[in-house]
Picture 1 (cartoon, rainbow, N blue to C red):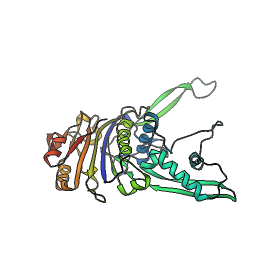
Picture 2: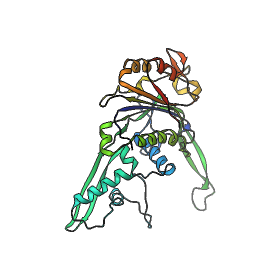
Picture 3: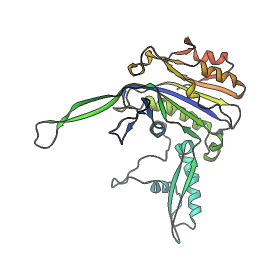
Picture 4: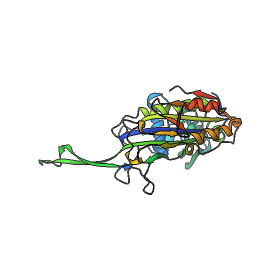
Length: 325
């Protein structure tokens, strides 16, 4: 395993058509929208769930945060889940012994703890009763809330169900639903090399993270998420620790001939990157390289002129590497 020794920033763009990228359970599961700006929001929790599920279901990687039921159908709480990583029998001589064993096994076994950290509550049986406490790790990988690059329009419709409203009734049930005709979402992330040492995060784990971001988004095929398409994965790796430019996501801007709420397809937008390339060029001596994976449908411009993204980085003195997804 290769230790993380440098800081990195990540920008990830994906879009969705006629779907709900992140429903709000406190608002009838409607898509999350900032009422002041009309921007679609997707929480980092939703994004991490996408990554976790992909790594567990398709890469056979153990994760700590997953739903596990016993034979009676009861779902494990976090304390019960933590006990899955206690490899000695209770009662224990001391709480710290059990905590140390659980912590070591969590970090060795669970990629999501190595990536995202977490707080794990503990309740252990001791020879002199019980004791409680917790394990806390700051996640080396942190994501901001994802935001659409344009104002969105939310569509509401009603439909009839397949079944009667109640036993003996002749009328079918009604259903209501809210969705977005289109949203192009921008996520920003950072990899902290200092926290990575504490969770034993490796470069191999980061490769799996990137795979989970791209392919997890693409393969999240549910009724509300079908149609999600990853468009850009961009990762800037720095030469030294404790340094990053910051907020690279804000250096990408969306341009279109349509008003925001009328956008319905990636072909109707262009991504302006002139500011991004300029900023990266000014900091090229501190940048190891830039890694990128592009969808063939996305168009980039600089000062309004269509350009090749990778070529523009190279001309600015930035070494590039294509990511294979």
